[in-house]
Image (cartoon, rainbow, N blue to C red; front, side, top):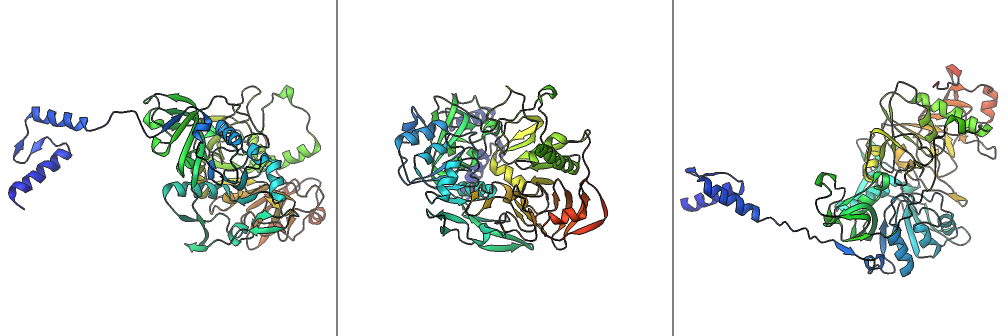
Length: 530
């Protein structure tokens, strides 16, 4: 290379780095200014981007055809694309494969498409309180691929990130891992199509299974605001599945409440950059219904507690003794979530919710509820100072990464050695595992089960081996019922450490369908004092 060419290359390199010097001397100031001005002129200042702004919902979904795979954002009926779903209903497209955490309730959101038989297959984590969803599944009218909530959102995130598959501890030892989970029944309730076994592998002596990524033809999502470039921002817990779904489809259609000019959403506040958004629609109307209203009542308006409620409170008050100052805690739906009201004075506990909240507060007072602010049980909630909102993939990264110190869940059965079953009764009832499989698969998070000791029919729920499909294998560390408290060792089994007033060892053994060790330090069942 000639010396002149070397100098030319060096000069060009310095220009690209904005250097104000030439080889052999300083460049004149006027020339430097000229170069900087020219450099700035190379950048576009146009606000026009690839996102198409649609006038009507039907225009936005114009190319969704029969048999399409659609990712639909929301959690329950919080943060769902109401107008786009109604457009699908009006268009009448059918044989859809819908990927969504759940299908909400019967007469709202995806429940409307189920009623009209427009959905052929649901890929979800939770059936929940939608009787149409459960009926069609159990009667062989709907294919359902039940997937742990954290695995589901990670499959979606992986699809958007170009990762074809990944390994997770979630579901190891369950039907998700071994295969045999019903996908399709016949009209008589017999399984005619079931899931296949997952590949398994060990890393650092721990067991994992492989899950494949999910991509959709379309993603229908709901955001709070979009700017004219197509950048999106969400409101409170309505972010949930919407954010990762934006990134995992060929065409993302964002339904928003408000469209603002470019620059009105500061760059650091953008939740989804416009590179992921192809179409934007401003919704005309929003019902924003709430699935479950829960309120904090003044003492003067509290009704007397029934006997079952008092028994639940006994469980809750014992659970609350496990809270330690500075803990990050996840409380499951049902009995566990009520423990948040019994935190001891003088300690701070940060409650986490799978749908994307850290820092849950009490239930709101009547009239102060917000449909964009719900917990994992789809109940109205508030937040405390210092709380934060995030998407579901971030939420389950916290869970799977063992960043929580404690999780408390309910159960249908708990075995002597800590197996857990809490999501289905084959042939009778299927609610779905939701986030429970993810929560109990964390290696360094303590798992407490809070439940009533016996089922409504009087059958023991504490058993030698679970007869129901497992949520987790050897995962329970402590069991708290209205009758007793047990520590659980995965090899030694259950040890009774506390017994409730009115119970004896004989009465407890009669209602417990497995053997247990009695601690030499056995004491009366403790209760939090607040």
